[in-house]
Image (spheres, rainbow, N blue to C red):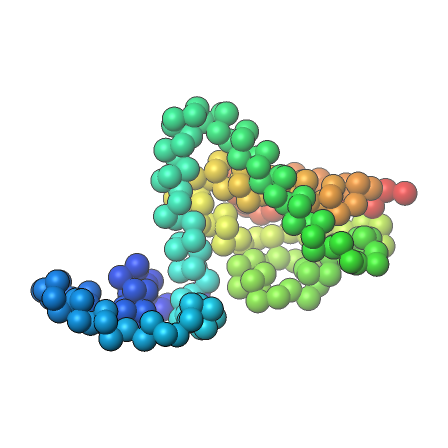
Amino acid sequence: MNPTPSPNRRDLLLKVLPACSLCLGCSRLGMAAALSQTPSAIPLSAKAAEKTDMTYEDLFKFAYVGMIPVMKNLAAQIGKDKFLEMLMKASSEAAARGVEAEYRDKPKRDLATWMADLKKPGPLYEHTLTYEILKDTEKEAEFRITECLWAKTFRQADAADIGYASICHGDIAAVLAFNPKLKMDRPKILMKGEDECRCHLVMET
């Protein structure tokens, strides 16, 4: 991984507001003056479209780690088993809707179409997964993932159960939404503490 130091929330704010406005010793008057000079005329769409210098690992920490304590708190209030059940249901429904939207205009929903992202991964998969395709035929495919940034992030935060419910469990619904004839078996899952994710896919006739 890129050894760039992890930016905290103050570092991110420094990229948007003048540095003097966040100085611990500045007065309210000084802060107001600094904010009055902020280029607020620049629309958010333009500012938000700029790229950050965060690593993928830093991005995952920023996106997930801050929410994990909230989710643990909800689990404690609702009851862990009930909370995880609700989370799996919600993530499955969201995954199914996402697949329907993504593949709505695809001419085929065959195994080759499903495997296309693994064969030619985009930047997200390239930087967050280490995997190997073991079998790739018209009716059957198998691959294994030996490193996963989602699993690493949630396991390091002692929240693998939440990670599985919110990230991994939805894959089952996604496959069914893609094609009910596509069957998936996952005997091993990194998020559950095993040494790899092993995924076997079969397109039934």
